[in-house]
Amino acid sequence: MSDLKIAYRKNPVYTGNGTGPRFFATIDLRPYGVKGEMTEVTELPVFFKRLEKPIGPVRDVYSVYPAGLPVERGNLHALQSILDGYLKVLIRFDQLPEYVFRVGTTAWPIYKLGNELVTRYPGGPVFKALTIQDLRKWLANHFKETGRVEDAGDLEVFSLSSADLQLYPVAV
Image (cartoon, rainbow, N blue to C red; front, side, top):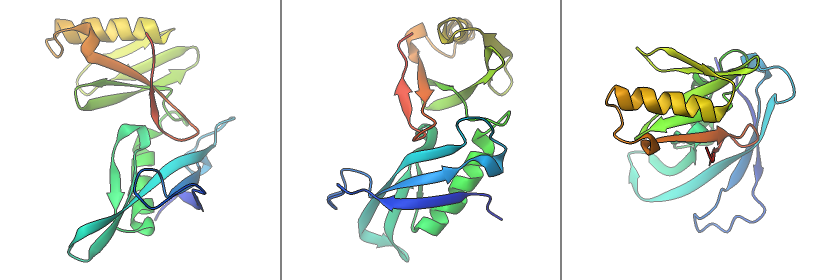
């Protein structure tokens, strides 16, 4: 059963040419345990594309990119179901991540716990720091020492907007 409470509103400037979102979604995060000021996503862009060649019965595709992950389905109801599962994985400690760090095509969330930023990746240690700059240095050094990256610049850090769930580059 889906915990996702979602409402869609039409993008008033959508032209149908596929260049911008067709809808914006509002999502109530309280069913996932999120508390505090940021309990609602208000501007998640929902894109629409009509396929030139249908894939089986699928002729239309609706897509969103929460935290940079492409999520696509053939209708809004199916999109809602898969997005519900994704949010259940993304939300930890009753909150969305503050940041996401990425190496190549793999990304990991960074949460704010108390006054510390905290992250880990499967099989790796827990990384904690007071600032995103310090956390990035520690992560970059670790990934360089373990051979996961050749250059510290290969590790990217993004801020996750709680308004639209999109990633925005962070200058570190």
